[in-house]
Length: 424
Image 1 (tube, rainbow, N blue to C red):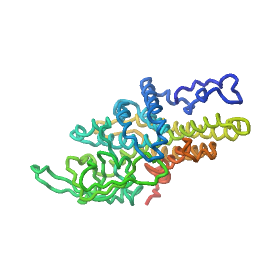
Image 2: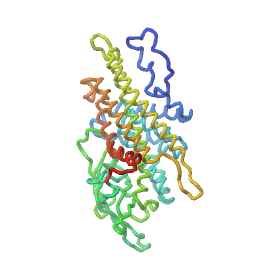
Image 3: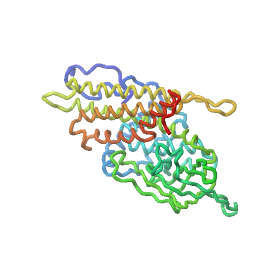
Image 4: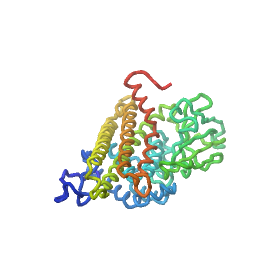
């Protein structure tokens, strides 16, 4: 557990040898950040841990190897009532630690949760009309229906803001025949949950004025074609899809009227980028957990690996990276709490995009180093999926890349600190 460190020394008789149990050692939350949570939040986090330990941890490796998503767990996951925690009155720190803990056990399940709750459900909260919320929110929050976020395109990832090719054309129709509708054409790629979701939030460029629009699209509509992306070496449990739209008709009632530019998209991406940075924290916690246990239990040259100075150095560097990353994310969570709306309805405060970009870039870079050190500690066993480290190592590459690559996030920060953009 992250929050049970008491600062106690090693058990008597274990100094210089093997401790009675790894559970007797300090946790990876070495500075006890979890103590910043309320008692209620700590209890809820422990409830999540119990669920992850019983329902996810024993099977995550099998799902990953088979590239299968366990849809049967969704009712149990929904029963935790963790959808959009900040909307339920929890702190942003708690919401981040939820993602970190999920990632610590299985990055793929955490990614599913983020795509559905932190992008699709949060979009309904932030931009959905009263009618749209009444129609979709309860089922989505309770995982009776699942959602996806369809923004990235085959030829446009980091530059999708200016290069979006998926189009939307409004067609007038009498109210007696159902009212106006939109015709979508184009393609999206790397859409998490895309193969099985019930609904997608699809972003498209208005043919009339070039403005960015967003639509809730029923995935079963005529003209929607979905195909799973195969041969992945990371997040294999996540069902990423290529999606094609050919003359797909979407009712005007399913357009997000509150979205009219890519700036609105950035509001959502800032939140999801924060959660991916929390994933980088969780991935480091996982790597430390596995590497330390292996070092304590694995015997070489007649003694445990943990007695070798170089192995201890690896573990200390891993721990330092994890603690530094978590400390940065705790501050981001505090900034998220400092949001207020003035008399004119203008929002102030919060973490800005440059701060979030730095957090994502820094935490993912430290994560890459941490998982590499962890894999090294396991030696040859670190490259086979019989041991968790190989999966942790591979999944880290996806975190390093999505929600803005390390390079793009670095350039966002570079623009902020120099006043000069290096992005064309």
